[in-house]
Amino acid sequence: MNREFSGDIFKTVQEILVQGGIEAGEARAEANLIITEISGLRIEEILAGKTISDNAESKILDIARRRAETGAPIQHLLGFAYFMDDKFYVNKDVLIPRPETELLVRAAVDIIRQNLTTEAFSGTVNVLDIGTGTGCIPIEISKALPDVPMELMGVDISTDALRVAIKNMEALGEQRRVIFRKSDIFKGLRPIDKFDIIVSNPPYIP
Image (cartoon, rainbow, N blue to C red; front, side):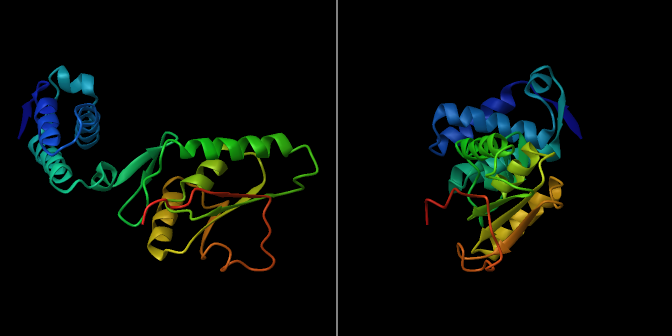
């Protein structure tokens, strides 16, 4: 059964998060994210009186309580994170893509564009991402340069992380140019593997 909500649902979720020790500004942003993603409605629609199902409300409150009680990243609880406007699947096996990592993607894209007409690149551009995690870096480089002949490889020592990367690659339709391989940095690569650009945003926490 559906019932109408006002802005009270936002207040309730924010209070749960703040009581769990989350700073007020962050709690507000996370409350908006949880409610809109789970309900499928925009904030303006909810404030205007659009209905949220009881099932969605229950899930919203459950996620808010788990966030407050465990301190787990909201992205892990929701199962995804946004990166360069795309939705990437995430779980405990990978670090969450950070906005700062977009700078690395843009830098790599700029270098490729600037060198396409020089002798630096001849034919297919080969890119390696070390410690690929979610696969967001090679996937987004590929998406940014759809008309450039490229082959992109992401490597990771974690099989579980590679499963996440492959899932993201398939969801975003980049199977044609992006591949993933298990490797401890360069150890799993073949002597014939050569790269024009090597990028990495390695893990910075245990």
